[in-house]
Image 1 (tube, rainbow, N blue to C red):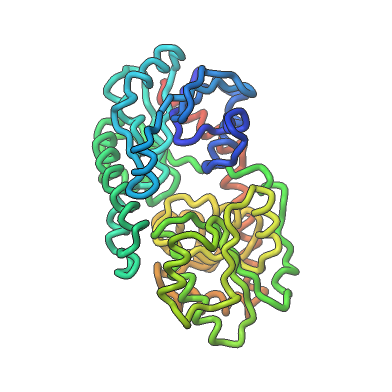
Image 2: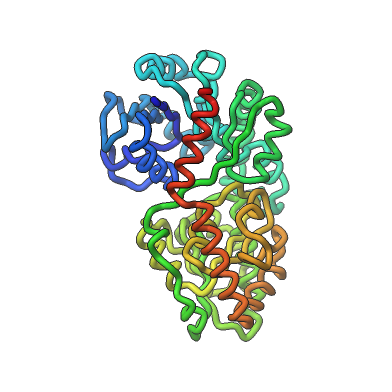
Length: 402
């Protein structure tokens, strides 16, 4: 079976291109395990003009996407470029070269969707995030945050990506969903399509590691969160929650992985709190490699995510697979992965007092925290079992071809 992927990232080809870590760790893991079962070909945008190359057991096809000086300045200071059909002919050339049995597009919001109407080869579309929902959410962001340059830039990008998503979802026949929530939303955005639910595989190191319950006995409660530099990731909620906890007798530190102290959103949030900012409590640790992140999580007491929108959050699932007691916002697809009171605690979006109460509750009910973590690990290892996920994906491919 010959499969052609179109991805937002270069997957495992990053090791050949620049060796700098990119997002989409689950894409790399799926690439690694599927390449032994199918003839896998991966196309992606890249800023250098390169010939296709073979790495591992996968063929990679960089789509040359040049940036002019003007575009670079726009991308940095005004808005991030959203490509539509400009590279359609290049996509079709890759399809002609590969002659795949099936095309798999990762993401509803990118320009790859334009190939639906251009080929008779069956196309499967994976729902990573639902941008139309993100537009709704970003318009509900706190008023202070809407003054941010980053907010305006992100909203503009989401609005333009949502138009692509809406247009291409009307054409797609086959959909891969990653949460119960996204499966239901597809009933509205793509009601005629057939939809399969298949989970992600996690990054390798998280399967072999296990959180130690002794971390709950530390004198200082260590909370960790992984997020990106976006206005919907709940940094303001973390700030308010930490400020509430700082007024109590709880000794804690809150590590934030994914953003550094120079992040515009971090500096803005700090300024908004003024003297109420919980100094020496919140520590932005910047981006970390897989091994560094795993080590930090293993030294943590709790994992907490206050995001305002998620579909199938890999950062949350990595914490769950370690067995770390976890608290998360009840948004989007999180209830697919956390059953409240069984594998973690769910808190209503933006409810800082709810988050603070949940943190203190698990801190004072350690036996219950341990039970939640144990249950989470058992369920997550089943759900994200690499053989199971790969076989489920292969079955989807075969179902479509049949």
